[in-house]
Structures are given as structure tokens and as C-alpha cells.
Length: 307
Image (tube, rainbow, N blue to C red; front, side, top):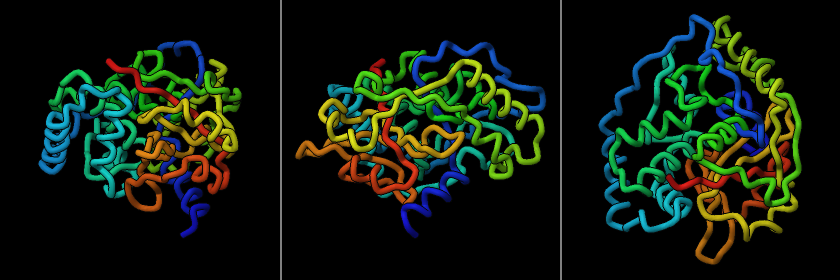
């Protein structure tokens, strides 16, 4: 299947899963955000394979003294340990009630970024326990670090960035790198209700998605994008482990794919990501990768902040 067709399939099945923005003010208290009828459930207990995989990765981190590296370098090193892990769809939506999903047996593009950031922040402070990892993962995934609910999940990646920036987890450096401001109403989820099983027939969940999109519009939610042809010009300012969002021109959507900046031994800037082609890989030239995909217009860059 061509990259173009893979991307279109991904848009309907996977996006948006989270979101990013620029300098929007903190959002008002939102219905957890939620209208009544939004269900929550306790965290899914990690299966033995997830616990074993986590323990192996943390053991390697201790052996290699990864805590002495920058957070970005830690994240890149952790991500490399998951090379070849399968691309998995809908991992956050396998149950009718929202619960924290911590699995490590495969990823979509967003859950890969979230997992490496949550684990990396733990390694940076020498917290190698699974409980701390789960707490950080929840704080990153849900608006304001709220308890899990579908309405509190950060579905648009531009909001994911801005919400985590407000809490000191990441810093959006796209504007500093010369990125141009993009103003666009985020309406993709509301306008493609039938593509989302969780709220296709659930009016309460659909209402909270509509409210979320309306709140973002009321906040003049915007983000910055480095045009795809300009990536190489700023590549030397992008660090290993920086969080990369691939911006799209698809109506109502902000970011269509995510990954981590990968700095190769020869200095070349690539993308470490859970690829729609089927697994976690490194695409060795990030500008070339972006340019070859239809509807991608450039990148946003968020730098992880050490705890």
C-alpha cells in the first residue's frame, strides 16, 4: 500500500488522538471535562508481558546510566529499544469505559511518544517503577492531568502540546525556530462522527467532543509550523528526543502523525516513530520523509522538559 493510502486510512482510523497548540490561555474548567454519562474505569492492570518489557527496559537504563544523559537523549535511547514493535490501532479504545492503558507490546504514533516521554522522565529522576510510569502517562494524556475519561483525553495533538507545556512537561519551540502561525478550527472529530466507534452512537460523548472543539475555537487555539522545505535549515537546532508533529492541510485537523527526533551518529536528523507501515522504525531523513507524504505541510517541535 502506498504511503498516501496509508495516510488517508490513518486519518479516519487514528486521528486525532491528541493535539498541540501555541500560546492559548489555560482552558476554563471543562466537563471532564464532561457531560453526565461519560464513563470511567480503574486503570487496566498491566499484563505480565508489559511488566516484563518495562522491567527489561528499566534494567538497561540503569546499566547504561541513562539518567546522566539529557532527557531527549534518554527518550531516543529508550525508543530504540522498541524498534520493530508493531503498529497497533485503537489501543486506547478497546473497552466501552475509558481507562488508563499502559501496554508496551505495540503503539500508534501518539502512544509511542507518550510512553517514551513518561518512561524518560522517570529515568531522568531515577524512578524505575511502573507505578510512577503510569502516573506520568496519565498526567500527559488527559487535560490538566485529570482522571481518565474520554472527554478529558487530549485528542488533538496541538492541544496535547499546549496542555503539557502549561504544566512544564514540554516546551513548544516551533515559533523559536521560525515556524509560521496557523489558525484553523479543529472540527475533524465532530465532522466525522461515524469514524469514531466510541461516540458514533453515544450522544453524551459526542456532545462533549463538540464542546471541546468549541472551547478550542473560543480560545483562538493556534499553532506554529515549520514548512517542510525549511526543515533542513533548522535541523541543527532540533535535538535528539524532541517531539515532532507532522502538520497537515486536511480541513479541521492539525497534526496527522507524531514521532521523536532521531539524531544519528553521523549527525543526520531522522524520525523515530511508530509507522503506519507496520512497526517502530527510524526514517533517516526527516525532511525527505515529510515531503513524500501527501497533505503534510511541515512540522511542529516540542522539547521535553526534565523534571
